[in-house]
Length: 416
Image 1 (cartoon, rainbow, N blue to C red):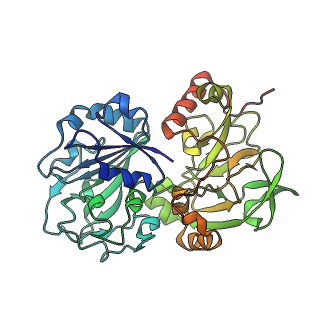
Image 2 (image 1 turned 90 degrees about the vertical axis):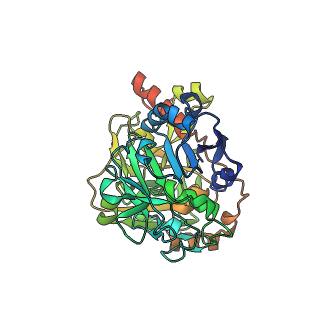
Image 3 (image 1 turned 120 degrees about the horizontal axis):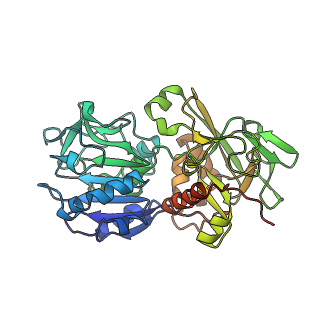
């Protein structure tokens, strides 16, 4: 559940048409009137549209330094651009790209290998090279593949796979997502296969797998047990000392080719003792977005609560916690209870699967179908989901960890 600011270069503020794409994805929408440091500081993502076919908004350009700084500090930037020519001037870290405004293949949009399956197999149907087409000049040009920034992942192309219609790449601690196709325009009646919520899936959910890895020891009613040996009905110990039965468990493998193509699928390794108080008891390896319990005086001062959940990727600022790029393949396990729970994994407190919109999209298609057949209410847009502990926004998580790092304090502290 991210805080997403929405902004139009032509209007100098957000457009009402952008709101549904954010809220239907389970996120909080914030109208950005000036994309300066003050307004950007509260955002996890800035979602920008440029409706102008001839250039870029002066206000956006005047605040580009603040936007670039925010991306470097962890914000995501999403841009749907109709002008295309000189796009390198609006993209943080993108000064070397070659952008070409061109309508020769405007209505021919293909799905690249980097597009997540949660987008191409969405709720309204399968999106393929043919079902994506049909818009009136649906893309306004392309970026040359050879000019993409380091670490970029192509998402959409024209019929020429070297002509990139949409791509994502890392900048500092954040990411930039750029599209020459105003995908928000081609939803619903124009293309029934694409829902508004799926727009953000294409850009923001390429790596949001929320799970443990094979070998993680989970505390059960009968003692620690490797997660791959657990089954439905097994009782797992939760943070208050009670137990809860597993309602659903699933696994998915990410092979070496997928890891090389999308390094963001690599897990985070939390080495033994890195959290404090001797925890975890052994190396804990989880997906980047899997949340770990932070229990500290700093959390108490910031939020009025000593216990909050923080994504593992945010913890990598701390010693002994890092993205493990040395693994040849990863097997991820999802574990679900009747409610969101905090359980004990390798001795540390970590969340179970939280079945919000983003988490559901991270589950592989076949497993998602099985899950929804068992729990059809999960598909309802108005389900009232309660997290097991407070989940700060990404920006606030970053600030919390920065405080711990500055003061050399453990993120898991024993309280009297």
